[in-house]
Length: 297
Image (cartoon, rainbow, N blue to C red; front, side):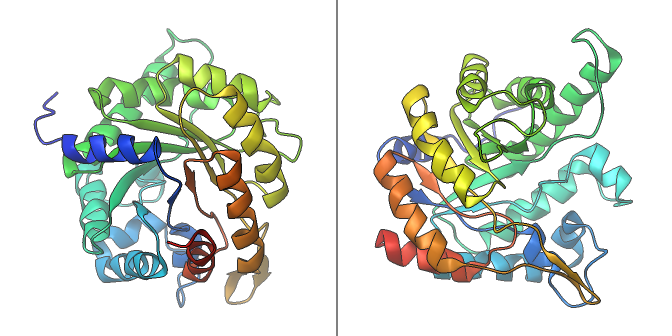
């Protein structure tokens, strides 16, 4: 596997800043794209090549709002997801398109998003496990080859969900940073298997994660999880909660944003020791701007 195009300088900068600052990450891509006119049934990854100007515009809004870290529109851009969503271009094309779209916004740092792969597996020597690992390896290499500063395996609901993905990402990483972010309930347990966040952090770090965190959980869950993660982790901690479930309307899903609550919370996360803060589904650049003001970025 050729790693000569990997962005080593960006990786060093990401690692340095995660260990010395509280960085502000952009908000979501998926829910914002779903809110575009007549877009409720369009898979987010489709936009990377079909409407790149729209993806770049959203990234630019986040940068203008104060985001220091952008996250590619590739949460569901593995070969498995592209086939499921009937997106014809290759993994390499779609992921490179997403990286190029984000780079148009001139981010300080750029993470390549990788979401769960919907294949069940039962043993590490099984065909299914090897398939997931290979799918993750392929997307990780595509993102790194396109120039991201690190990988972000996000919205992980169980250790089984993580195992082959982290293995595949590390197959391709060749020393580049791999960040892992879990989904927890208000008790701090993973949604999929009930494991507590301390045990999840321990597993991720033991198997090579360079950062651990939570995303797409409630504000209450994030507030409870951050100090617990900081106390148990040896790597930088990240936090990016959502605003809850949307209201379904005839025009598509509608989320009720609460920028002030996120602005107040991000101060507490920084005080607790979080290395990167942000927001997830249902927020927009308005929330990012409120957090940037609170953090004095």
